[in-house]
Image (cartoon, rainbow, N blue to C red; front, side, top):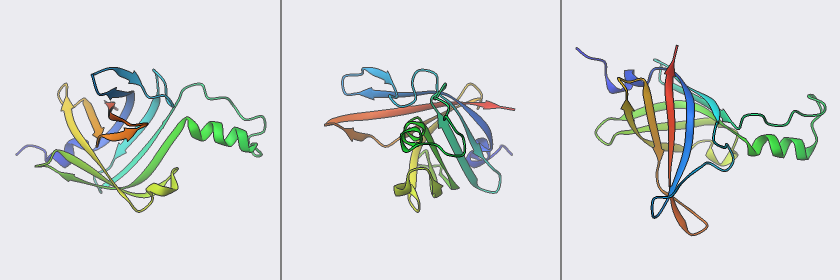
Length: 149
């Protein structure tokens, strides 16, 4: 018997790209994370998920244990993170992240749905949040992850 769809998620994934497509098909890199973001996405067999991603080469703080408000804001602008549990809705091709902790306080206690697909023999995972509106334009975001380890 083959692995369940949920089992296909289990492992560690490296972020390769975050791309936004606007109506008309034009694609751009995510403005906060750039053309070469880095990050890790971890799904465990126990049903937990943890994701951290960032813009490369963020500016170091002058004093690590006493950053200024501007240094904190700049670091957060180029960083994303949350963790919790996950559920796979196989028929809908949705992975639902049940957020328990997050950099963005508004996400704590929420469910984040991601349409998913696997490519390259389960070595690449494509996640797409629901369409969203940004400055009056519909945006389709695509996150590309590759299995590591």
